[in-house]
Image (cartoon, rainbow, N blue to C red; front, side, top):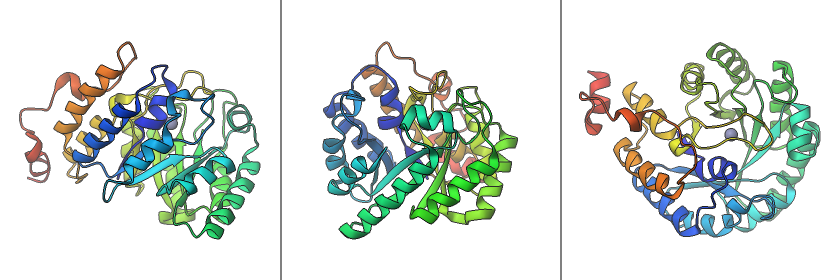
Length: 308
Ligand SMILES: [Zn+2]
């Protein structure tokens, strides 16, 4: 229910290149802490994102961990071919609901991305692979380049992705324009349209509303959220975008609300410290690590405290 995207969304937006050995250490520790969904990288040309050049190797390791859903981002057909070759459990195909952002980021219109998803689905079916296809609708709440993105357009593209053969879809506030009211409205409409096939919410904390937006989506029935350890992440083509919802803060909030995540927040805080050591000089985010856990919330007692 909490998908770690720090190794993809996080690392792609910062200059430091984390070694393959450290990425594997990160995945192992996240797995030991109870995380069962991790986006391990992106199949893009290494010259565009040298930070993620070792995605195939990292994915091969992630696949050795029983019960771990290892996902990758694939920006196009070529990336999807590699994801299928490497046996990813899930591939996320990003689509930008903002036409301006789509052209800048993917060099395609949103409808051209929909057509690409249809080709990817045909390839997947022909190969006999079981890799799931998730269409990730980004800039769903607005865009730095275009400004307004119409709800009707987001909903149309979401439905088009499913019609083209995506197994499920997610909605992303790529640049931190969402607020709890707009989240409740859009996720409510989207759920009414496609039900549980809307499988994930992806929020950036650019303007401090990340967790409030998670809560609004939770109330609209969403139970799976993307998050980055230490709140790293952003988008190189969306100026101003920085910081995904912070994994450790999100897990703490959910557990505090009585929602079992299966994740040990103390172990996450320890992992955060380790990862911070590899990212010296980079800006990290999050608040729990500064304050620590409250006195009445020894980790094992978190849920009991919430339900007492
Ligand atoms: Zn993102």
